[in-house]
Length: 228
Ligand SMILES: Nc1nc2c(ncn2[C@@H]2O[C@H](COP(=O)(O)OP(=O)(O)OP(=O)(O)O)[C@@H](O)[C@H]2O)c(=O)[nH]1
Ligand SMILES: [Mg+2]
Image (cartoon, rainbow, N blue to C red; front, side, top):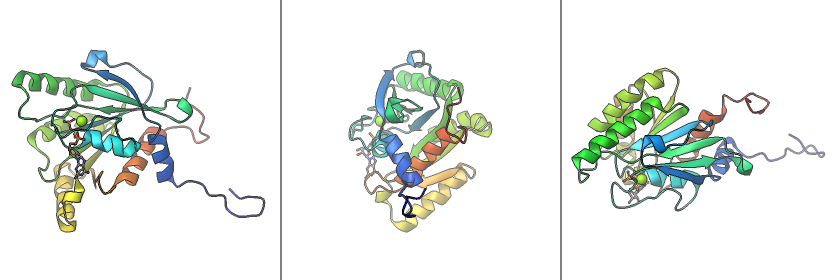
């Protein structure tokens, strides 16, 4: 776009637009079980990963809000599915879901099994799940439970669902450790998209924001009109 004097008007970069969109996040609801999840018509993006991997911190960083999702030093803090709405001018156009972490040793076995079932059901059956962000602390690597989750979502990824692995707390790795972690995770996800992410150093934040925006908006008509 040009101004009357012919100078280019400054339009925000796609990354800045994506971050502004993420900043609109509002808490919607918390669902202790799948049947408590509200149905809605918007694309949903789920954040999954081992307990303490950094899911809630990642959501807070992406949305540029300090306490939207509850981040904690105590593993197992997120115990229900928390949903957040996104959308400019209070017009919701997407939902983020913060899922409880798995693999925390101190959780009673029955609770662990119950949660694994809830998560597998969610990932297999949630109708408008547009994408999954799997967070993984690269110092632990992808674990057996992460592998099970990869198998659960494989059919949906093959059917077109978006998927991204974020290697969190990248500030704790040096450059060569980071590159090695990327290579290993790419092998383990059979060439899946993997990025280094650090909430502390804001590494990978803009690219991830842009990916989420594209996942939820690129199917829209080119003129920006709502689908219906
Ligand atoms: N150094 C560093 N620490 C981080 C980063 N992201 C998260 N952490 C820390 O990791 C711990 C766990 O973070 P959470 O965001 O609560 O992890 P979670 O995956 O939501 O955990 P659960 O809800 O228990 O599943 C906290 O102490 C965070 O401060 C990061 O990028 N760098
Ligand atoms: Mg959490």
